[in-house]
Length: 472
Image (tube, rainbow, N blue to C red; front, side):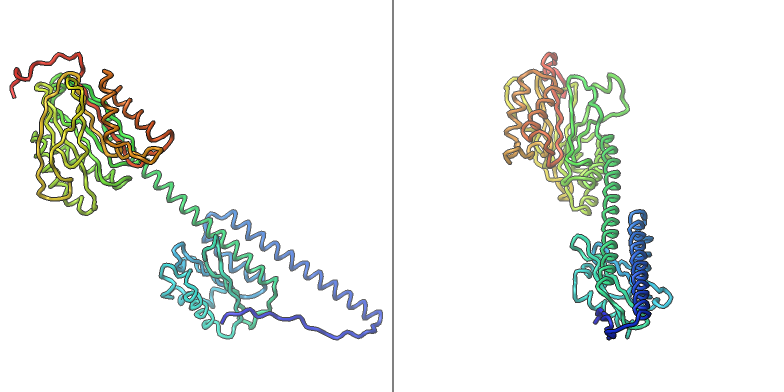
């Protein structure tokens, strides 16, 4: 058992009568003792001040920890000291084991490095295992006086500090104990500061990666809506995190066309959402974007596009344990026909100008990545002047209000109906929708999920040919 071995002060009998020479000799001895104590006190203060300076100045924790056993042994006047720090997970921090004298302690260090319980998470909080380490050190130093104390910071065990003297039992006092504990406390602060610094650095690294990811993702989302004959487009994505899983895109089915021919050509409109948030969702959506853009060039109808995309992405999505909702549509400005297929995404809302009412655009289909041989239905409609389509993700309808309720589809339908009746442009309708969402969520409150909306509108003043006059 590791114990403290105090040495009681010796008592001597003093004659009641002394000569003047004896009195002078005693006075000189007392003064010499006081001077010695004063010098020792100043020396100890300088050692502690130097250790404090090192803690403030060193940015490398290892350099500071190297000094701890040296300062400890000098402070209490012994030949040996051992520092066993713990990692944040409670294991022995083997890279930072420090001991003096080093030459005669190599075997002890090897035993500590190979001490199996010390490699297990939570070792530091297991009192029995820590005592087993104490006994290991005591066995190595049989017959040597040892004093041990815990290094604690914010209520967590950060290590153990040992003091020993190979010459025999420790000549110990309460002052010695307090000095060793003071060094242990300073060491705990140093370890805690380093852990906090490493945590800050990791956060800064993640922030940089998120910023890069957000920048890349923002470049993948269209920075402007294309000019397509006979319709207006407006879109916006508001991620809950720096990198989100929402996705929308506008893709020409014949990208080789340019100018007016491109504006009159067939275009694909898509909106999707990866289940989840943050970097993983953003990376998966980036992968799917590349696959989808390649599929669009095939010219296949929407149901075949989703079928092929589902098969292509099946393996990658299975490994990530995530799924994707996706609504895919293509629009032909010459016929005003919009074809669509849905992979379990929120059905877009269609406001019909003639009926002055809102309906859903939906078709049966499973999530992308759920089943390899999933089949998808294809629907179609013909647009008229004043019609409005709203594509959106569930971050809109699932947004929480100040009272704890959801924005929900009914509220979105009412907002779309009011905005569409006002005769505003696609951009004006989109602004009204986000303004209503922000008002519902509350000023300055962060969205829980990514929220994206795309508004497609056929202008009211546009003169369109009769559908019967257009060849299918």
